[in-house]
Amino acid sequence: MKDKKVIIVASSPHLEGKGTGKLIDSYDIVVRMNQGYRLMKLLPQDYGSKIDMLFLCGWSAQRLSGEFLHKNYQIPPSKVYLKYKDFREKPHPKYKIPKSTNHNQGIITIFSLLEMGYTNITLTGYSFYQTDYKYPKEYLSFSPESPDYNNKQNLENFKGKIGHNQVHTVLNLQYFIENHNIKLLEDTRYYYDKFLKELNLK
Image (tube, rainbow, N blue to C red; front, side, top):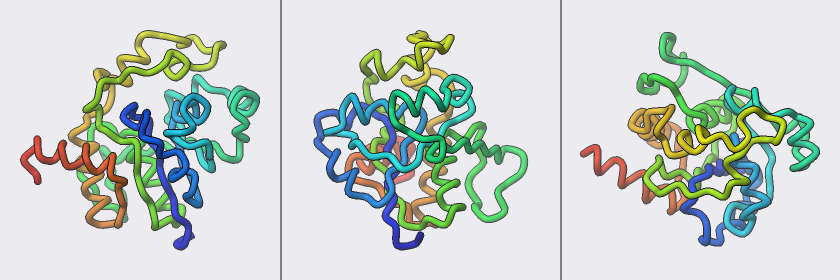
């Protein structure tokens, strides 16, 4: 596993028009999260078309059936992972990360891959909600049978108005970069550095 090059592809819209799809697909293992699988069909030239692992938070897992993913996106159940970790009360015995009110899926996915033995991990598509989130409706909606299909709350989640504290996310990511050699592609490095600068940490 140490020799495998892994890339985690987040879903920030700033990758649209960048033409990074071929670069993403060149990695040995391509990991996507939550609704990110939709971008493989909507914008494969920018987000790539390959998927080896799909990590779902509990919220997404409740609304997406394995049958739907397999039928519409050819993602077999063996590629879908539900990993939820809560370190608010009990710190992780190995990873001495800063405390957080609620770790987001991006951080939990890094946790999970490290625990699985992967050590060569790169991130792309992260902007920490520093862009205008203008997604096509096909991305924002869940499966048609879901009660949240095209729910406006989905958009509020993606805008960062609901949910995870991005300061905690960036501080947790800083720990992984400094202690576990997590790498950032240029697009994510830009927003990461910008965020740290605004926090007067860079």
